[in-house]
Length: 93
Image 1 (cartoon, rainbow, N blue to C red):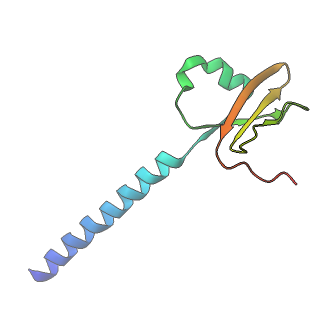
Image 2 (image 1 turned 120 degrees about the vertical axis):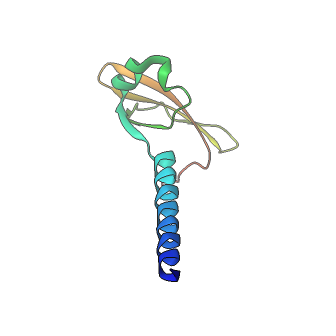
């Protein structure tokens, strides 16, 4: 009887850990879009965490004086997408 209680308790703990791991992974997962795919989605992607695959347009990078906002344009063929990144800006040197 005692062994059965430990087995049930262990199963519950393992299921809870698996569930928490799954929820954490799904919250941090982001799908890669091309610029044209993202633009084709329209407003349905607003507020979602996504990653955009494209090239930074030459000469489009602007960093504000405070250093925590970076503006640039991502291009793919004829399509372009303005981006405003807020946070710690990576070192480009």
